[in-house]
Amino acid sequence: MSERRRMPNYFAYSPEQAELLPRHVRDELAKEHLCFLIHEVVEGQDLRRFDEAYSEEGQRAYDPRMMLKVWLYGFAVNVRSTRKLEQRIQEDLGFRYLAGGLRPDHKTLSEFLRRHGEGIEELFTQVLSWARQAGMARLGRVAIDSTRIQANASPDRLEKREREQVRRWRREMESEDPDQEPGLAVDPQAAERLREQMSKPLAMASSEKRSVTDPDARFLRERGGRFRLGYSGELAVSEDHFIVAARVTQQAADTASLLPMVDEVERHCRERPRQVLADSGFYSGANLDGLKTRGIDGYVADTNLTAALKQGGGEIKAGNRRVRHGETLRMREKLGSPSGRRTYLYRKAMVEPVIGSLKQHRGLRQFLRRGLRQVQTEWLLAAISYNLTRSHCLRR
Image 1 (cartoon, helix red, strand yellow):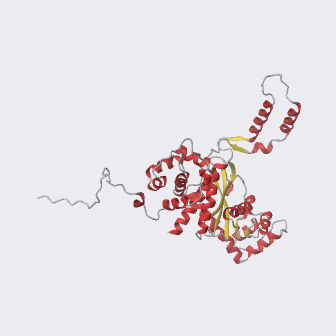
Image 2 (tube, rainbow, N blue to C red; image 1 turned 45 degrees about the vertical axis):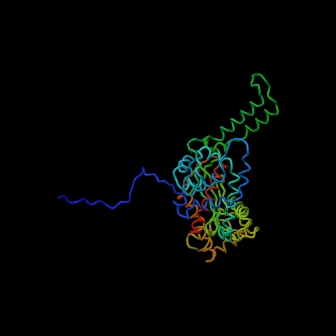
Image 3 (tube, rainbow, N blue to C red; image 1 turned 120 degrees about the horizontal axis):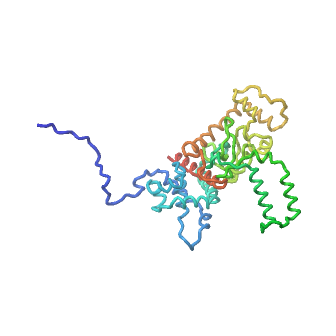
């Protein structure tokens, strides 16, 4: 008699078996799922700026509330491509809940961002206000930093400014002769003006290169002396790791960004930070004077002071010239103390983890959109999404 074969104890499995009563998404996802928080927060905001962009007549449009929800959730789970987002809206429960059964295509998703840059900036302020009313995004101490983000453009497809200048001169000359017929005289004054422009040296212009794919992108220096074709993404982060200001610039150096970022924090939060921390890239005498004028306790080290702090303290070498700027001397004295040094070094624990999260976990090592205005919208969406994710973690 053959011995009966023993079968493993499996759960019943039949992919073709359909449920008679389909369950609601809320029954499938945990109550504290991120998509429910995004839905709650977006529904509570004033989105009249988005509504004003549409009319009662003409072709039907997707509700901007739905579009914002799927975009914010997409940035939270590193789905930033419009085609991937279109696919996930059909397949992912969280996206399907936020889309409410609708299925916008990739072109519609892309057009929404192109059209509503100003509205998304206003939403950033509103979400930040919501977080602050809930006791988050505390503004006593703020750390400011920047990071280089690659543009959606090939560094090999470049065009020298000199060629553009010559083309511009040619267009201007041709515009003086609209009929484009030989033998017509050009206005003498216009000709003289163009000769003066053409006689100016082009040494500076010829050395600057511009991307054909994304003309707004710039070659920016990174650590190690390398250059990256992209943009500078700037952040101001609160002590509890909320982004309280975000912007994108084309600036090769951070010096000119400190005071504008402080003003951005005040604009979005309607309150001025009491203390600002920033590394030596943001240092200048004018910046220290500006912080003092605004009544802000600044911790911004100059290059020599940073080198001394990295060596564990000691005498600060001022170089060949003696420093006479009063605020710089006071800053060196403040950061030379143990308490001042601890405060300054705390900057790394505030802002650098946020930058790391955006670039590593959410894929923001490269922008997917092109043009300064569009990458600014992309950066703000990432900031809003990060703040929502941060508040979600604190809630849990």
